[in-house]
Image (cartoon, rainbow, N blue to C red; front, top):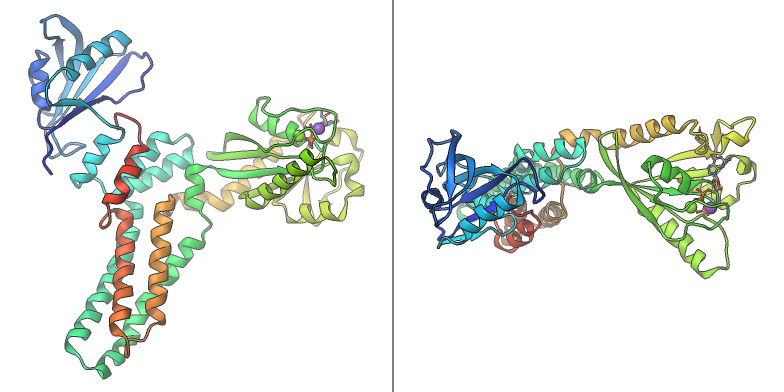
Length: 446
Ligand SMILES: Nc1nc2c(ncn2[C@@H]2O[C@H](COP(=O)(O)OP(=O)(O)OP(=O)(O)O)[C@@H](O)[C@H]2O)c(=O)[nH]1
Ligand SMILES: [K+]
Ligand SMILES: [Mg+2]
């Protein structure tokens, strides 16, 4: 792909630092060095250069790298300037670049988009670059790296190969055979497609795990008023995110806080205490609490130790349905029950801190048990992937339900459609309409 514009941007964050990296990509990347009064260094070898402005005054002493295309990140000639990180230095060098004709500031994601367009990365790998830059936890980092290594594209492309193989057979039969033969060949078509549909259905049923690793696993904290839900959330977040007070019904809205638990990104949701109430605001809070508990990936029921003997039927039911049951305020108890609502009770005193470590450990284990293998399996990580798989699955289901003897064209068309949807994942087909959306989510300089 030929492009007129040469683009540049800072690849490092905008605050002051010891160094800043300015990246330049495009046909004029070499010439920008000449215009800065610097000679082009040997490919991929760092060299010290004095960068000069138009008036010949030195702007900075910089380390300069030159990566000739096509074996560069973008596939084009790329220059990196490692300048001193001060604001004035960066502004001066960026200003000098901006004043050069044919050289323009990069849009967000422009470098990676060029890498994709040059075939250096496929679409899931380009997305993985953004995920790796955004990764805050170990699981996010590992999952993004796996995707950058091509794990997800390899899976979706292998699926597509199966479909294309079947499609080739079908088309051959359509062209050269009479109906009897086509019919005889149908089981050979159905077998691989049935197996494939099974695999895709399994991936879709795996509960958004890759997406949860990327976006955060939601854990709802629910329970009766004054059980100590907000106290628990504050203790786990290690800051005062929610108001704690003696009066029941303190928390009304759902309060979210993000934390890293054993390498997983968790969104912890504090909710209103569950009880019958006539207060319309509190009533709304209770409704939201129940909604959240139902929508969350995990729920933790917090009960107050001293009231454990008098649970309402509703609370019993919620506790039985929760993933974990925590009995709080054990500082006020002589004896802690081992089982509540048929669930093992985890004893905690948020006030004294007793049992908190243990609870955190159990929560981390529960999360890991559900999500750890996702990190090695290259799952779908975005709605875009899930949508493509859903469309492919329904096309396959239609094809398998169709009649090859009476309507071979319809069946073939559905198989073709399935291949097309699978090809969308790695960006083999229907690319144009998603590019802007994907790359606008990047930061500038990537
Ligand atoms: N003794 C004792 N008191 C606690 C403990 N944890 C919390 N409390 C107290 O219990 C009261 C209620 O705590 P909150 O954290 O506001 O409880 P909540 O479940 O969020 O309450 P609502 O938002 O009103 O539903 C406060 O006075 C806390 O100080 C504990 O472990 N032991
Ligand atoms: K309270
Ligand atoms: Mg509260």
